[in-house]
Length: 114
Length: 113
Image (cartoon, rainbow over all chains, first blue to last red; front, top):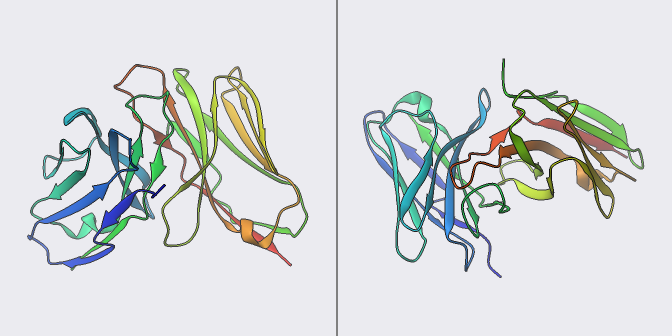
């Protein structure tokens, strides 16, 4: 069974631009979560989607948004990029939302903002 | 103070040693506990997943949860150079669908020949 896939793997953007990252979950998984990983803050939760609905949101500004499609694929968008948005963005999928389900991570998208 | 505390290391051990990795936490609502392994420039890989207190063993890996002390551990027996990676603990409460995963900062492990 294929794992979680994320595209693109690497991205370089300029401050002020916007970016869209994509995540395809493991087949049969309906919940997708997004995380930001930086050396200083570690892994921080962005949001979780299940059945095309956002179920939970972390403490990030409104510039960070996401959505989920009917096939469970998900996208996250960051508008008006700042230098501090440079990070590894990780997507994780699970069968369902909540703590009872194991989360499996993709390889991540490394975003560099210059 | 962070909800989950983890010694960042680095922790250096010789091949064949028993490794002990630990996390402490402050939120008594945490019910699900996980350990992930992350190699450089890769996504985290789920190693162990436990619910509430107790032990769980899988091959060379043993996870322990002590909820009374708010302390979890991962033991690696017969450590190998391929175990060199960053180990992240993670946990979440049992609050239905609206619960987020909280991670420790990770411990970098180096297993030397």
